[in-house]
Structure formats: C-alpha cells, structure tokens
Length: 406
Image (cartoon, rainbow, N blue to C red):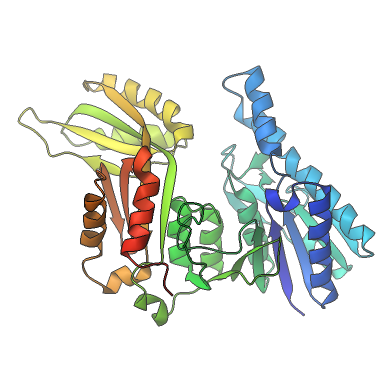
C-alpha cells in the first residue's frame, strides 16, 4: 500500500464534468489499495475573475483582503470534489488550509509555509477517507488567511507529501509531462522521461510553467518523488528525481522562456560602498524578488548605470521605490523597459562540457538577436532579449542544441 498525493490544476477541474473525471481517477487509485490525498486548485478562470472584481473596486486592493478573496476558489473546488468522490461510494472529506494546519508567515499573496500539523489528515486517512485539500492557502500567526502565490497549489501538495512522508506526489495538469521547450513554440519539443530536481528548479524559476519553483525546492529538500502528468489521459509523465551520472551525458536538458519580465535601470549611480545595499534593501523590504543584476564599469565621474529585472507584476511598485532611492543619493534618473523577455538554457551537463555559453551566444548572434543582459549559474545561462524575438530565440537554441533528439 502506497501513500499518494495527487494535485489537480485549474484546467483539470475546470467544470463539473472534469471534477467528476478527476474523482474517478482518485477513486481508482484508492481501489488499487493505496491511500490517497487530493489537492485541488480553483476551477480554471476563477482566480482571474476574483482578481478582476477586486480591481473594479480599487486599483490597489489590500493584500490581506485579496488573500481571503482568492482562497475561496480552492475551497469551492475541494467541497465539490469531496462530493463527487462520495458519489462513487468512497468516503471523502474536504479541508481548507487552516483545517489541515498549514502555517505560513505573514507575507500576504506570497506567503511561505513554515509548518504543517498533519494530524488531522492522518486521522482522516486512518478512517478510510480520501481527504481533499484546498491548495494555495494557509494561515499566519494571527489566524489570517494567506495565499502562497501563483502556482501555490503545487507547493501545498508537495509540502503535504513531505509532512506525511508520501511515496510519491503526482502533479496533474493539461500537459503530458515536462518538455525540452514549450511545445506551443517548438513543435518538435520532446517530452522527457525524467529530470533532476536542480534542472527542474531552474526551469521552473526561469519560466517553465508546468511546475511551481517553490514546490520543486520543497521536493528536493525532503526527497519527495514528483511525477508530472496529464489528467486527460493515461500517458506516463515525467519523473522529477535525484541527479545521476547518466544525466550529465546530456549537455542541455531544456530551453525556457519568460515574458513576465521588466528591466529597471538606475542611471549615473554614485560608485561608492553601500549604494547597492541601499537599493536592494528597499526592494527586499517590499517583498519584491530581483532576478538579474548588471552594473557597468565606473566612469571618470565615479558614477555607473545599474540594471536589474523583476516580474512585470512588481515592476511599477519597484520603479516607484527606486525613484525615491535614486533621488536620495543623487542618481540621474530611472528608466523601465517592459518589452523584454528572458531565454535560458538548462542542463547539469554544463558542469562537465566546455563552450556551452559560446554556442548559445553564437546561435543568438546568427539569428540577429541582441543580448541585453546575461546571467549564469552552474547549470543555466540566461539572456534578456527583446520580447518580440523571444520565440525565435527559443526555436533557434532548441535546434542548435539538437534537443529534438533523445
């Protein structure tokens, strides 16, 4: 008997018929002798609908109230799913994040899980239930509802799997697994049978939307086996697991892209100790994540330009903060460019192969695509380019590294 956590995304539970189909899959897994916990997202479109409602009232909705509003979508789905499973003759109970003891910090709209009291889930399983948990949510120390950010139901599922030492966490979505690139852009993109935690973490953080990055980090830290597969068919998915030596034989595992980028530039920043600290402490205090950072060489006037990227959702907020900081230390202005995107190559094989960066830059050069910013790690290289050329860049790199071949 295995303990299996199954998470179903918004498209998998988009309407009542899809909810019934997911209930059948969960029930079938239980009838095979397994213990099953189901984690659900809101029905497709519900979160966007609630967000639209909020912005029809105010341009700057209060984040605490947004958390309470947005968490309701998952609650609706969990109750309907439990009813659907009950109709199949099995016992089931729905739970909110609060009811299963998911404790988070107080960073509203992007909270971090700090602790899970899994005792109520264990009791429900021991009583023969299929627990259905509303994903994406928890509570903070003040008993306020919090949400875990975009894709947070993935994080809920993996965290529950870790807390209960589940045998596997299955992430069901509308794709059959993890591909070498977005198949909507690259028709010959190949589905991978397996990928390492580190590679998947990089791909998720760099724009691959099949898995939430925080969920992969959770899985890696607690050695939770992840399987990404489709809820619309029985096709085997992609296993996310520990790295092994065979994985290093492949130089590049995948290509990702991210159009949700904005570049902010501070012009003529005084080149002296403490300036960068002042800038990024102000950004961090607003709970804004900074991605790539580039600083030019100081000129004769002891000033330099500093550029960094943030998500488009945070760009206006970040720009406003930076303008105030720039005025304080005598900078010469702030500019923002939202017409940028990031393309990245990812692979553990980079650690043991030379010339990967040169090949990437040469490929983009031959395609006539200008590189604005570059960022690297041991297993990835990212370039910021004009958003109008991003799909062309993805196709060129996928072809250059022969990713259509096994």
